[in-house]
Length: 248
Image 1 (cartoon, one colour):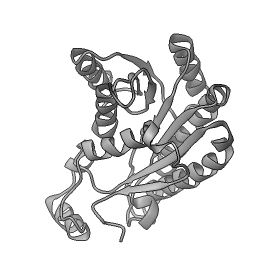
Image 2 (spheres, one colour; image 1 turned 90 degrees about the vertical axis):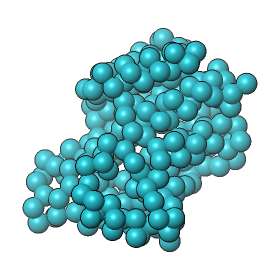
Image 3 (cartoon, one colour; image 1 turned 180 degrees about the vertical axis):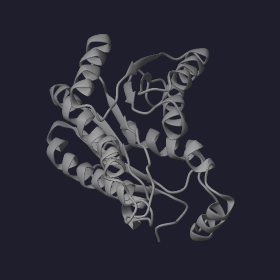
């Protein structure tokens, strides 16, 4: 029997990278997966097929998490379809990198809207149902950039630092009803987002990582499994860095 047997888990940005890894790992542990995506339906359909081929259950929900009303409609549809949502993983995120002197206003706003406001939107609409259930696990994907800052990522680092503040505040607000809220702060992880980095940048990044390598998406997923299962029932308001020692 899996650690997440009979649980309903909503994963935002589930089409690739860390979101895909979490969705597949949760499904292997017995959860039914609600796969959120914004545009790349081919990727998320592939994830759904992988889950179903392994004997799991998954359903697609198209929604731009930065849209407050669209998030409300997605959560309502999920509750209508499954009766409840036990686990929420706020993974959807984008980057629009650039030095502050050259960063466009729309690039700053877009990253904040998706990464930070998107996390607020899903929690805002789902928490009312979790409060009625008197149970729930919320896992927000932050970043080492939100802890250390990162040159060229003023928007991304600010959004991910905001996710940490939101995580701690939601932990305080929701704890009395048995809902835990935690964050994972990955470092550099082998995904499509980091694959496009120049080799020189990757080499420099590795020099900052104590373990000397990028992380795997599966390693982030294993941490998410722990936070989502009963073994972590007494953990809330925490930020777990999965970064190979980068932020020491």
